[in-house]
Amino acid sequence: MKKISRFTYLLSLIVCVILGIYVGSIWSNAFANRPLKATNKSAKIKSLFEVLEKKYVDSVDEDMLSEEAIITILEKLDPHSDYIKAKDLERVNSDLEGHFSGIGVTFNIQIDTAVVINVISGGPAEKVGVLPGDRIVEINDTTYVGKDITSDDFVSRLRGPKHTNVKIGVKRSSSKKLLHFTIKRGDIPVNSVDATFPIAPKIGYIKVGKFAENTYNEFVLGLLGLYRSGCNRFIIDL
Image 1 (cartoon, rainbow, N blue to C red):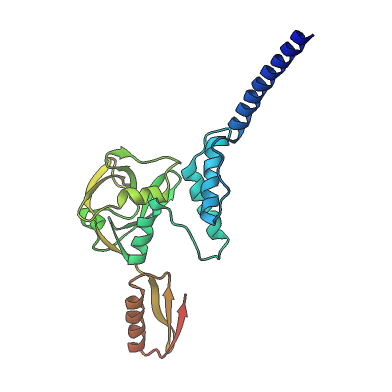
Image 2: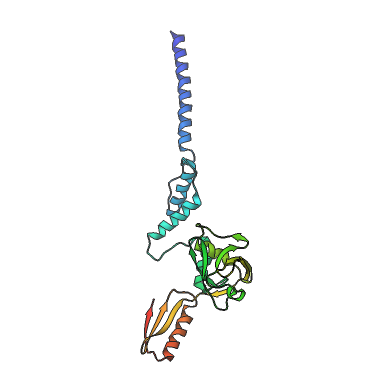
């Protein structure tokens, strides 16, 4: 009986040890690298990404989630707070500075092609002979047509550092051949005051389309012009 009792005791002890190791391994795997409770607001977001990286069933695009999180946070503040992505920052800064480096055309995407609507007088495109109505179908020897083209992408391809060249291929209704132009980019002004004119006797109208570094100077020049034309009352359209 003593031998049986001793054997039973040893067997029970071994089973308990094995069970302890097994349960411990499960517990360890379940809570390994578990983030500590965040004590401040920024740490909460960091901890969330750590949990997603280690515990989420699928791969996570952290850059995309970060961008979306920032946009959502700013939307909760007020209608004027906005997040500008890095790829859009240069374009936004150009608008605020009142100029950018490009070829000097306005355009519209019609079905699958960028069509020149207007050519800025004295600008780089006018100097080489680009005309309103031209359909730009090539940029830097690459075909640029199709339903997937966008205004932002088109602008980014034509803009660039001052004095650098961009090549475009143009279809013109009066020519059967594709016309090619090499255009040297230059500074293109971005006007923030869209219109100034007398709207009635002694009443001037000033339309401010947006605010930029050059808005004050444009506004003052427009105001002086209206004043010299006899206006002493003004409608300012913001």
